[in-house]
Amino acid sequence: MTWAEQLLGCLQSSEIDLAIYVPDEVLTPLIDGASADPGMDAFAASREEEAIGIAAGYAMGGRRSVVMMQSSGFGNSVNALASLVVPYQLPVAMIIGERGVLGEFNPVQVPISRAIRPALDALGIPHRTLERPEDVEPVASRVIQQSFRTGSPSVLFINPLLTGGKADR
Amino acid sequence: MSANRTAYRVMSRNDLTRRLVSHLSGNEAVIAGIGNTNFDLLDAGHRPENFYMLGSMGLAAPIALGVTLAQPDRRVIALEGDGSILMNLGALTTIATLAPANLTVIIWDNGLYQITGKQATATAGPTDIVRVAESCGIPQSYWATDQSHFEQLVTTAVSTNGPHFIAARVDDASATARPERNPVLWRDRFMTGIGTRAERSV
Image (cartoon, rainbow over all chains, first blue to last red; front, side, top):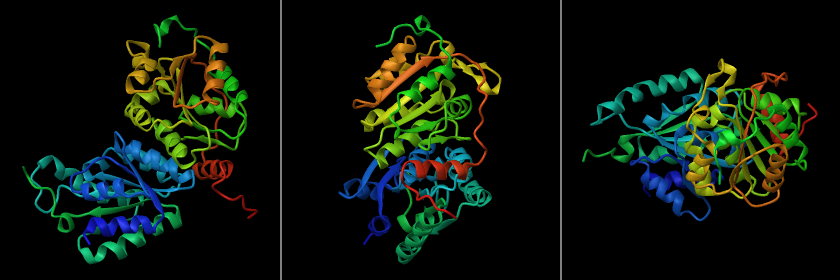
C-alpha cells in the first residue's frame, strides 16, 4: 500500500467522514483518495483558517473531519488555532504536507518550515512527523485517536522522505 | 437583487437581533461572531443553541457551515458583522459551492470596525455585501429594507431551502451584555444545546 492508502485507512478507521482541504501537490494522492471514497466527503476551502473553522463546527456538531493543507498554509491558520481551536478545546486533526525541507527548491517555502514546529509547541498542539512507510499506520492512528478522545487539535506532518517531495518543474 | 444600499433604513442592531430570535422555533443553532454581534445575541436572551465567539474574527460563517454539514436536519444561522465577513469573503464561495440548504448567513452592516474604534469598513464605501454574496454564487441574497422586511426574510430563511444571505444596515449603539470569557463553558453549553454532549450532573 502507498502512504496515502495507509493514511486513508487510518482516517476511515478513526470514523472520519469529511476531508476539508486547501490543495497541496504532495497530498494529492490522499486528497484524491478521500474524494473517491464513498464513505467520505471532501471539498476545498478557500483558505486554511476557513477550513479550521469548518472543522471546528463539524466537531461541535458531533462528527469527525480532517483538515489537509500545505506547510505554507499553516501561516494562514494561526489565529483560528490560537483563538478558537486551542481555547475552546476542540478536536481538529490536521495533516500538513511538508515543504521547505530536505531538498526544497523554492526559497519562500523555507522560513515557515522553520517556524511551524516552534509555533505548534508554543500553542501546545501535539505534532508528529511521518517519514517512514512503516510508521504511517501506527503513528497516524494513535495521533488521530488521541485528538478526538482528548478534545485536542493535532498535526501529522507528511515529510518528503515519505512522499518523495515536490519536484521542481 | 439589491439596489443601492444607502437607500435602505439604518436599524437598531439590538432590536433586529431580538426580532431574529423571536422568529426562531427553538432548535436553530446560531453562531455569533465577535464583538457587538454576539453581545446583542446574549442580550436578546440566552438560548442553549447559541455559540458565542470570543475570538477568531471572520469564522462565524465557516463554523456555521461545519455545523450544517454535521447536522443537516438542523437550521443553522451565522451572525456576523461587516468587518468580520470582509476578513473572510472566500468563505462565501465555499458556501455557494456546497449550497447547504439549512444555512443562513446574516450580516449586521454598520460600515464600521465598531469595537476597535469605529474605523470605516469597505462597506461604508463602494462595497455592497449583498452583491458580493450574489456574485459568489448565493442567489438568495437580500438587503432588509426595513424591520418588517427583515422579519419576512428571516421567516423565509428558517422555513425554506437555502443557503440564505441577509444583510441589514444597522446602528453603532454599543451592546451592554457580555458573554462570560469562558470558551469551554460556551462550547459545552452549545454542544449540549445541539445534542452532541450529554449533560452531566458532576
